[in-house]
Image 1: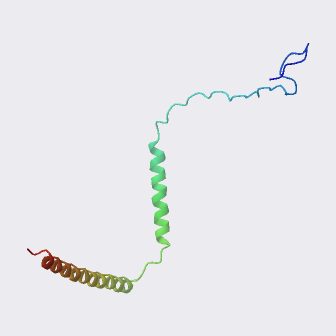
Image 2: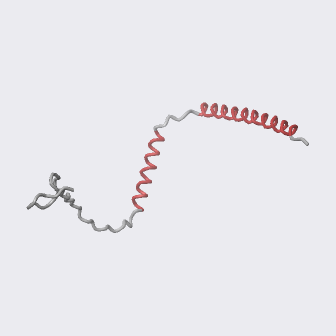
Image 3: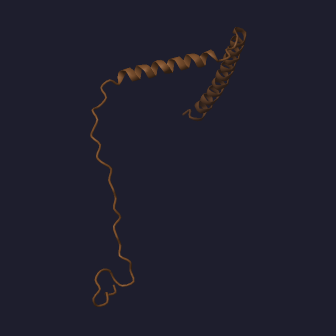
Length: 103
């Protein structure tokens, strides 16, 4: 660190003096009492949500009875075919392992 010339005080020569910035802190806010009556807001929010759900369901284009029955039959058919397929593979693998692991 370089010394200041005779008669001068402060920081070293050639370096500007650093001034700490003044930071103003916000005033401390007093603590608020906790909200005791929170239940009416929850009830109101729930009621509004249910109203919105009902309004949205009124806008849905529901299928007619014939379409629901046809779709249900397709689902049941696919489930039965898949169950039979998996049953066949299970039976095949069980017999195969029975032959391999037989003492």
